[in-house]
Length: 214
Image (cartoon, rainbow, N blue to C red; front, side, top):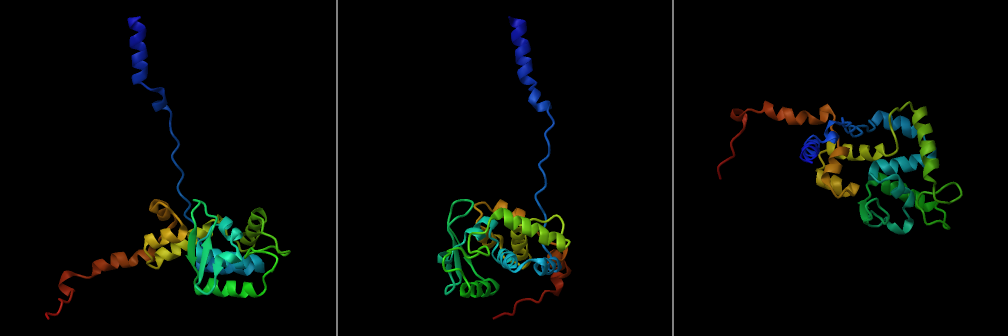
């Protein structure tokens, strides 16, 4: 009995699970559109899809949030869109920039009165997500853009904001993230946008002008 107990104790110390090699987690997606790619993509999109892509690039909204957006949730007077259905189940308000405001203003003039949805099919019904993805992939292929998906428009939105100096807290709120660590995965810098960081080292203490005495 003693021998068996010792062997069982030794087996517990040497947990076989520890000997199993664990796969490393994949790197987060690091893909966003540059402006030349954006132009090529928009040029190949049919009108209805061009509107949705433009809207996504300027709001950072998810595909499902865009397709579920209703006119009753859009206030063109205040320039605010309120999302009732979000991934984390919380309402979120998105301010509309001039590009999106003009887009929605134009759509409001030719909207289907029988439909509550902002973006609709050719017969006024809610756009099917699968159909959108299919046409989006066709547009990407025509535009010769590889390694890109619709969700990367959201990456593009966040990346461009950060590259323009918008702080991560604001980006987090616009994206509707509860954790800023999630936001950091979306926000990328390209080398030129980091240049001011190293340029600051060119300024030597002896060249800094002292504050004037009052």
